[in-house]
Length: 319
Image (spheres, helix red, strand yellow):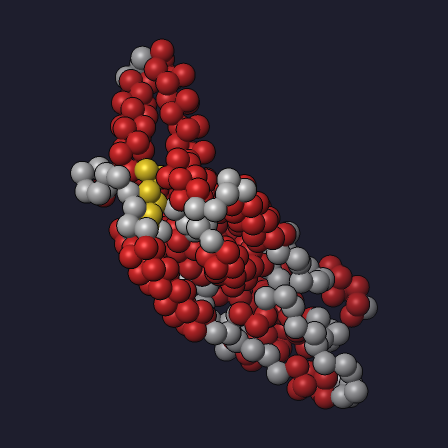
């Protein structure tokens, strides 16, 4: 009876592979190989030709805004101009996000995408995660239109700074995770000889977010200083666009959580509660033991835990 109940309410039996994060890492590698194949120092020329050059993009976005205004006022002949400019903008924003100057920057980009992206993907699911990644490659670069239209018109901006800032902003939606005492559940069932629970691919990154946030800031400061002194025309970040990316990451994921839970206030707590419930079920315990354990760990009444677990079934992926 216990096993049948467990199968009915268990949202996900195993930790999913962060497929979306692997896709992003693959694009970083492929983009660098494509740029480096041009040969030696010519990669700087490739970046300047394919990434966000302020003067060129300011004109492109200005034309796009003009065409959009024309379409909104009934001038449908401007629609081809709008779509053409928008597709060019998206292509340049995409290239700028995934471009890197050297192998050190490629390694850093892939590492931080894994640190912040893999854990976020496990929380919101691969589809929502890739949608967030796509928006993070388009929206933050628009801010540079207003910030750099007059200042520094020759600058070439590139790198994953805005995407990563968006991922970091999204993680602020979720409360800090609590660890569970696996040994207590095993011993309470007389199963003291059970093998230890294996860590999933992202577990090592889930309990020290402040450490990795500090490393991310230090890394980008070092990258900025090195490229600012060595290649003044190449730039990797804008504070204003970075804060904007943090904000859109938080807002978009907060809306996604609301759509899955129906609540802005306790939605993240609900998802964390269901996640902990699933983690406890992986210890091969029954439904009621998992409910009581989650209740004690989260400081919530068992009835509330049971209600949230059942209500979450079939909605946002929680692992």
